[in-house]
Length: 184
Image (cartoon, rainbow, N blue to C red):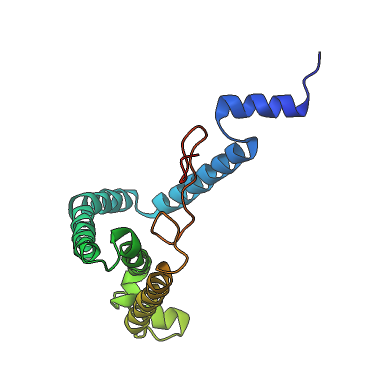
């Protein structure tokens, strides 16, 4: 008795939890990460290991508590606004989180250029190195301005056409067997 391709794929999905393509992509990403790690460790393995440990400690002991407290403070400030009827934490917090995250990632990736810590950049590329701080600040301002504009539009449109859920999205649907809005 031969098994069809569909039966084999279904059995694989049941056992693995995803498609064979997912497994292939995961294995390819691990291979790429291993290759990059080996290339990275070729120069100064002790320095790279110390950098990774230091980065993990800095993140876990300093940055994580810092942005957790900041996020809590933003939620509380926006929560007080909700009590006054001006929108709630779910409406506004993500409009602060997203641009802050993108700006933080840009800072993390480009901090040597932003803070002019790379002296050989201009001689190597022929491009000016003194423009990155201003550009990062401009990008950050644009991210927050765009997020504020989206929030303003959402709040303005929130009163019109908002479903029962009160967040401008569709009203929740009653589960089978539950009474709907009219007691059906």
